[in-house]
Amino acid sequence: MPREDFDLKLNQLQSEVETLAQIVGKSINRAVDALKRRDLVASQEVINDDDYIDHKRFEIEERCADMIATQQPMAGDLRAIIALLHIVVELERMGDYAEGIAKISISMG
Image (cartoon, rainbow, N blue to C red; front, side):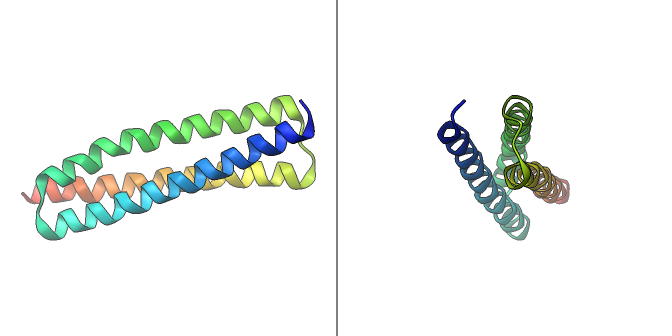
């Protein structure tokens, strides 16, 4: 694969991670807001949205692993891919926290 294709794929991965970060941030805000308002419907939506976050994490991880295996990136590029891997793990965990807040909201009624 030419260098341009590699750079394009890396940029796409970075964009997807940024998008996932925005989704997770909104999920946390919605979970806290639902808890404050005791909104059970919004809480359930946050719980349902966590499945999407989980799916995106594994999808991004798979694409990162594929890039490492097929492109053999050097130094800076490898660090960038590994950083993306670490970031998506933390984003998924934050999504789980939002889900936990939503479950607490539901249990409180």
